[in-house]
Image (cartoon, rainbow, N blue to C red; front, side):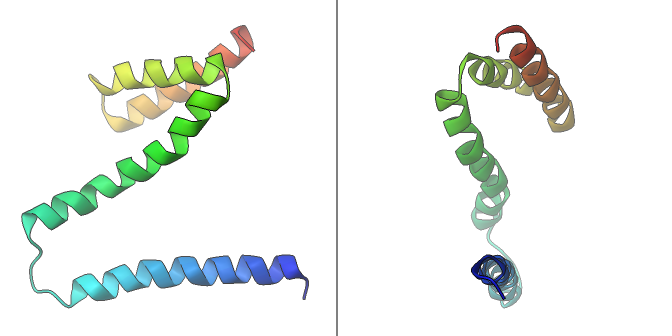
Length: 98
Protein backbone atom coordinates (compact mmCIF):
# COMPACT_ATOMS: atom_id res chain seq x y z
CA UNK A 1 0.00 0.00 0.00
CA UNK A 2 1.09 3.55 -0.65
CA UNK A 3 1.85 6.04 2.09
CA UNK A 4 -1.35 7.94 1.25
CA UNK A 5 -3.44 4.87 2.02
CA UNK A 6 -1.71 4.44 5.38
CA UNK A 7 -2.24 8.12 6.22
CA UNK A 8 -5.95 7.86 5.39
CA UNK A 9 -6.33 4.69 7.46
CA UNK A 10 -4.44 6.21 10.40
CA UNK A 11 -6.59 9.35 10.24
CA UNK A 12 -9.76 7.27 10.17
CA UNK A 13 -8.59 5.18 13.12
CA UNK A 14 -7.64 8.29 15.11
CA UNK A 15 -11.05 9.83 14.41
CA UNK A 16 -12.83 6.64 15.45
CA UNK A 17 -10.81 6.32 18.66
CA UNK A 18 -11.46 9.91 19.72
CA UNK A 19 -15.19 9.55 19.09
CA UNK A 20 -15.58 6.20 20.81
CA UNK A 21 -13.27 7.35 23.63
CA UNK A 22 -15.57 10.24 24.48
CA UNK A 23 -18.55 7.92 24.47
CA UNK A 24 -16.82 5.39 26.71
CA UNK A 25 -15.75 8.04 29.21
CA UNK A 26 -19.22 9.59 29.43
CA UNK A 27 -20.97 6.21 29.63
CA UNK A 28 -19.19 5.53 32.94
CA UNK A 29 -21.21 8.27 34.64
CA UNK A 30 -24.86 7.81 35.54
CA UNK A 31 -25.56 11.52 35.18
CA UNK A 32 -23.72 14.48 33.73
CA UNK A 33 -23.49 17.80 35.52
CA UNK A 34 -25.45 20.52 33.68
CA UNK A 35 -22.29 22.60 33.23
CA UNK A 36 -20.50 19.70 31.57
CA UNK A 37 -23.49 19.11 29.32
CA UNK A 38 -23.57 22.81 28.38
CA UNK A 39 -19.86 22.72 27.59
CA UNK A 40 -20.29 19.64 25.40
CA UNK A 41 -23.18 21.31 23.59
CA UNK A 42 -20.93 24.31 22.85
CA UNK A 43 -18.18 22.23 21.22
CA UNK A 44 -19.71 22.12 17.68
CA UNK A 45 -19.97 25.91 17.60
CA UNK A 46 -16.37 26.24 18.76
CA UNK A 47 -15.13 23.84 16.09
CA UNK A 48 -17.13 25.62 13.40
CA UNK A 49 -15.64 28.93 14.50
CA UNK A 50 -12.10 27.57 14.17
CA UNK A 51 -12.89 26.49 10.62
CA UNK A 52 -14.69 29.65 9.50
CA UNK A 53 -12.61 32.39 11.14
CA UNK A 54 -9.34 31.84 9.23
CA UNK A 55 -11.19 31.68 5.91
CA UNK A 56 -13.05 34.89 6.71
CA UNK A 57 -9.92 36.77 7.70
CA UNK A 58 -7.42 35.54 5.12
CA UNK A 59 -9.44 34.61 2.01
CA UNK A 60 -10.84 37.91 0.82
CA UNK A 61 -13.66 40.42 0.98
CA UNK A 62 -16.37 38.01 -0.25
CA UNK A 63 -15.75 35.61 2.62
CA UNK A 64 -15.57 38.41 5.20
CA UNK A 65 -18.84 39.88 3.92
CA UNK A 66 -20.47 36.45 4.11
CA UNK A 67 -19.44 36.05 7.75
CA UNK A 68 -21.01 39.43 8.54
CA UNK A 69 -24.26 38.48 6.78
CA UNK A 70 -24.36 35.08 8.50
CA UNK A 71 -23.64 36.61 11.91
CA UNK A 72 -26.50 39.07 11.50
CA UNK A 73 -28.82 36.30 10.29
CA UNK A 74 -27.84 34.15 13.29
CA UNK A 75 -29.24 36.79 15.62
CA UNK A 76 -32.76 36.30 14.26
CA UNK A 77 -33.03 32.97 12.40
CA UNK A 78 -32.60 29.25 13.14
CA UNK A 79 -29.39 27.44 12.21
CA UNK A 80 -30.49 25.88 8.93
CA UNK A 81 -31.76 29.23 7.67
CA UNK A 82 -28.42 30.82 8.57
CA UNK A 83 -26.62 28.05 6.70
CA UNK A 84 -28.77 28.62 3.60
CA UNK A 85 -28.31 32.39 3.76
CA UNK A 86 -24.55 32.00 4.22
CA UNK A 87 -24.37 29.64 1.26
CA UNK A 88 -26.34 32.01 -0.95
CA UNK A 89 -24.31 34.98 0.28
CA UNK A 90 -20.94 33.41 -0.52
CA UNK A 91 -22.13 32.52 -4.01
CA UNK A 92 -23.45 36.04 -4.61
CA UNK A 93 -20.44 37.83 -3.11
CA UNK A 94 -17.96 35.70 -5.05
CA UNK A 95 -19.85 36.45 -8.27
CA UNK A 96 -20.05 40.18 -7.53
CA UNK A 97 -16.80 40.89 -5.70
CA UNK A 98 -14.62 38.09 -6.95
